[in-house]
Image (tube, rainbow, N blue to C red; front, side, top):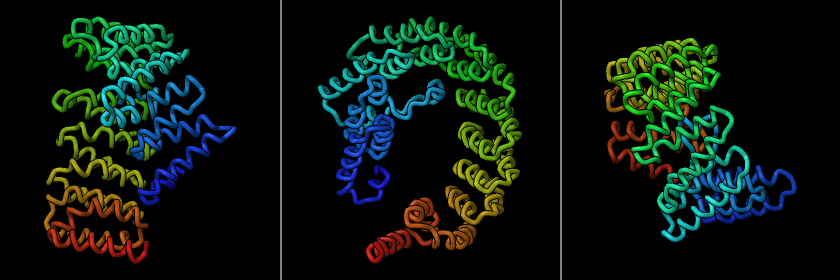
Length: 400
């Protein structure tokens, strides 16, 4: 039902979402997971108040507490990419100071009602939002909850997340405790991820040592795609100047991943971090990948970073994709390089894309049109962009 709401006129969306809520509340079975899904989708569609209402409707106290506090909660990502606090992030800018205090206190109460191990995670997530009104006691409460976790991986994640919330004088102590915990993780993959998260948290004098430990843990991982994932995660904690040897090792490992989809995912994650000197090697990996979908995804990630020296080779790689839809996807991504290409090349690119555009469904066409606007502007100026937009509007009126 929320997916339907995305496709109806904006004036009708609230009614559709209300219907979805009524259906979810009336369900005898699967009520909680349905409401959880509804919370996430409502937040994604920028209906934070409705998302909050759905979260409050969940009866299970532990689940309700989690839904109020976090959405898209992925424990394996906690120490690396953080959490998407969609409801909280969406609501707070629109609330008065009093409304904000009430909501945060409600979330804190919900978090404290969780009696199992997730309580520590939820408190750690809430700390940055509630520390101003609750002071250091809430920080120490979250720290004690983290210390009580039996699994060293989970304990290290929570302690690492809390480090930057402490006063500077205490950070070294907490980060060292997290480091000692991370070192006790026996699984190389989880140990590497825990140590990578600490690279930016430990005292400056320990950074080099922790980085070396994290790299050793990465190299100890036997499964190639997991080793590549760990190296990419570690690379994201380094500057372009200090990460050169690691970038090369990560690219070499990515190159040996057997499954093209995983290879594409890891390369896409690494590309934004690597200096331009590594992009030729990255493009070689793309060129060696035969799977059309994976190659198109790689080029989409690479396109915005391609230097002028590689742009024509990247275009050739895109044009070599066999599947016409994936080829169009890659070529549309390559329009990010439009400023580096002469009008004659752009015109040929535009002609190649027209058949695919003509056969695509309207939502896909509109999405592609956004990406192609720079080409239209360069070939025909502002007038061409305006006339194309008017033509799209006219078509929508004729064929709603």
